[in-house]
Length: 337
Image (cartoon, rainbow, N blue to C red; front, side, top):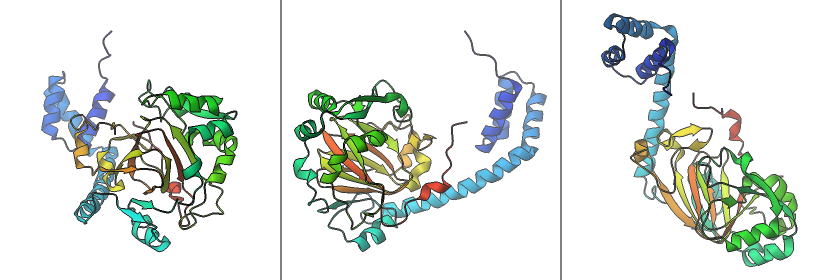
């Protein structure tokens, strides 16, 4: 069954979009004639669009946005020029002052080592420990992710309740897969069910507020788990307890290149970036690092990140920093129109 022919309003919308993209009016007129408009009709529609106050207002807004994009591109270029700007630094026992002044306030990532050394979790946590101590607890897990390209956006459809011991068995038997993963999206139920695990984790008071009600998020999955490119509305710590993870990071200043199609998500497949399909990604700075047990990765607010489990892995993530972290108040969710 063929699609219906575009209406006049469809063509007017096409004209407006292309004029805002600064396509030459004569080229648009030629296309309209090719599609069946008379030369006079094509010229009339284009002239009407060019003086339409709605389109004039939209063009002004486009110019304002272009200035913002230029500003971000300058900051991005300057960051690339900085020595060490293309890697995530590793800093041992970074002091509170250095962390906030050099990384938190400057919106730069860093891997901090040594701060988790006193955590009982580092020596206790493995699959047998989880099974023996918490196997009878009911938990939530994300399932059916591999059949849904937008499993994160559709996360509510993928929730399954099961015994923690059964999930641990599944993780132990599985090879590399992204089909199931216990993530921060399941924390509402799991924080209560697995409350004892939080006794094995100490607040990193050098950087985090021990009085905060946000006590962290628990992640457990097999090798092969993937979190697609997205950005968060807060600054984040990823504390790696078991196994290794590969993380790809893109600075917030490169947002114009990442094909942000919905809310905080990108259309780009972080596991194998297709630069032919997404050519604008060539303008993005992709910085990669690997974290293992004892590493504390700081992911600055707005930074796009893709995360892949290289082994069976357990991660705790935190947002309860000592400094302000409530920037989401000014964020507006939008949809592709």
